[in-house]
Image (cartoon, rainbow over all chains, first blue to last red; front, side, top):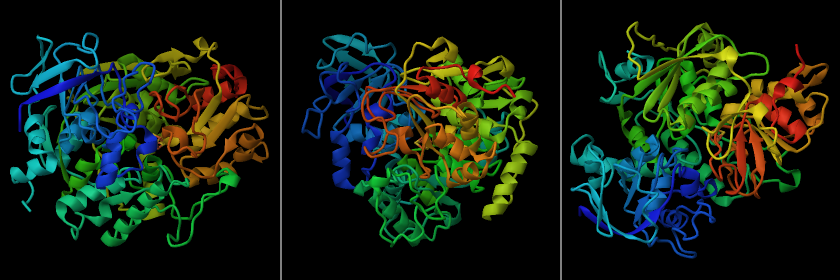
Length: 181
Length: 458
Ligand code: SF4
């Protein structure tokens, strides 16, 4: 697993809830069905208001994003327990989200699915960083570098190896918590 | 240890646990529904094999309730996926929408869904149904693929919402690794005053600690005020623990809990034995505060999140386009009866939709008499558009043809539990959360209204 993730940032504010990440009308898509998994990616963050986010996370007609690194404020992923939320972000090609804090179930679902790294920033970043800037995230060093400025991140702790492994099941098998198939 | 710590210690086979500790917990009941069930089943088959059997078919409860009265073919396919799994695994506790899944079932748009479209097995909104069907046994661990699973904490359970991958893991093993949360204690005293409901109390509490004030934590409601609350009230409060970010909400066990639970276990024939937990004398809290219920006033949470607390009487300048009563939080019989007391003999001024949480609530309202008329009739005569199709409906938006959905930007006051942008449909709508009393009074005036002037005083 590479410890460096690099790409364009997509910046959001506080309380981006699961309805904004994947609105309820798309929950009829079943993530374990491959075509529907792809489709979920195409709807990722479609619930964000157009007025506040004129640059869309997914360009019209696309299934993948140009922004692999998400930046947010407090309480990212609050609301429902739908695993469709981290899955839609992961399916769209997002690799990590860096927020001030997370809602519990969203954080857990990121880890269980291994879809993306939910990282906490040491200080609030969403007021200073801009969508489209290029960031270089170093998981081992715990830093995000944007235009030469180094931003400190909090360690992922015990969640890191689970996501590195590719989610709960792969991790559990690797560590013989459940039988290897 | 606190109630939550005691429950997790027991389920983890340990004498003691401490907050922060990770414990492998034995699960008593796993609940899933039509939105997350198919994905959970997909994870289960992918990880344990096409021919794998669930860990215990008698402990899995499947309740289609979210997208069921819709013409959307993918939603209907999802219920078919649940049916197939139930057959394959021999799952008994499946509350199917229709009795004969082979019969041709068609959405009747002409009737605006006002006609009943379900069979006798159907149970309605999952959290209310779990309680109504005797699946909430005190002292147990209940996990569900829905964030409001925490509602079962009203019955002295450890209950919390999980995602599909975790649920797939539980389906195969019966276990899950859970972190023991720190406990926040809300000691309630006094009793709810005139015109104030449990919904006001929980909106007050969330406003106090903030919409993320209980993140990673357990919310324990105890004290003499908690005991004064009915089981419906306790359900409303525990339901909304998640709106403060809480992992679970929990109440003590008492005679009211016992009476409610025992009657429903008997009626539905679910497993009868259970063992409640009691808190220890010595409990450690990260937060400990007393709330006097008698001082709480009609409260609303303004757009755009459940922590935007305000008093109803200070919001009279907010004009409304729609009122809505329903959901696991606000669609119980007691909620509709409260609503009916306010609107009886009057007419609502704005579009008002009523969606009972369960078919049982429909029956109760149709039987319950208010001055020689059924409560159902009182509501309809006041202009409330009632549907017999108990379900989640517009609480979470859903497909475009969902009853009561906000299909264009508007202001809506609702007895449901969540008001993030887009929650009830259109992402530019504004949703205000309030008690059934306040929703009813506001429906009469078309503005957010304190219900106390609109309630008969006895
Ligand atoms: S009624 Fe609303 S809150 Fe309750 S389970 Fe259904 S969608 Fe969720």
